[in-house]
Image (cartoon, rainbow, N blue to C red):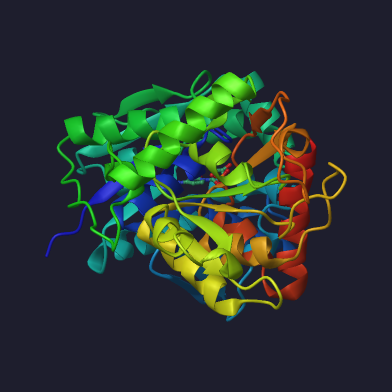
Length: 431
Ligand code: DC
């Protein structure tokens, strides 16, 4: 069987990784981060205290390295001499030295061979600098991603990284072997003024035009997020009635809608103020999504209605592993799912403490996380009160958090899940 390669090239922080990740998830193929391979070799060179500018010494060390590249079904993996360097690959020292190491032709020759090997077993979307020009020059599926240097610098510092993007671009573009350039036949996409969702849609359209065989849409137990331009009637009834009430009674104000990811799986993490919250979030979208509801609410008519609204019962009195597994499964099937990291409604309007469950779900599913902040719903329907009051409600949608494979690897174990939960909660609080 011939395997397809999608080549995504572009300068540092242009959005290549985010794009490649999203394409891999939506097309069900493997994402290979070729930059991580150059970074891994740089990490090994630095850890052996070799000067990255001393090409003969780098080449001698490279010959002794046992580099094993693979994938976990979605993302590329790498070990060198049995160690996985992924957690260290975004360190400032590596950012500062990777261009020197990757300019050495012998390093490139070795890594290009390993990159081409991926196609023996799987379809790939590979991102880098020379994928369309050198690694897979014959592939018809080539995209060159660009963005203004100012935008790219902001993106890198938003990621908390110390990286001189322009310096690295200059080195990567001016080297003699396989410099960064727009490959023959590549379509350029400028992401400076595009939202993440806009950029992904532009890439999918480009690939369709280039003739990429788009996969058949999966048909999970319920229709999938991106395929649904419709709602089942009971869902629609709830969506429409709540939506109308929110607009008339509560003068619903929506902010940050340009950040909203509207297709593919998304984990929506919101603060929790009142029973009004789930349909408030449901009203951000024009198709169905998945919610949680307390197990005890599934009685009487609700027992029938809640499943129609895609509500999954959750036990609030103890850690409910089975509901966590259900969310992760739903996300993997392509659904967007709303979780309230605090687990319960606020008593005083303030954002409370979150349990680490949301971090675990986010890390295990690897899907984009959309932080959302609700305000005013605690006034409209306070906890402990059955009375609805006229109060203005605002929903603010934050920029999605899209974790790189390196970040995903670093968020493991209890501490990792807590750290990711804190990052998500900080993003909600900052809105
Ligand atoms: O994509 P990145 O920023 O993680 O890449 C790190 C460095 O690796 C980049 O500055 C140049 C080098 N690189 C390369 O030379 N060729 C590739 N295909 C990918 C990365």
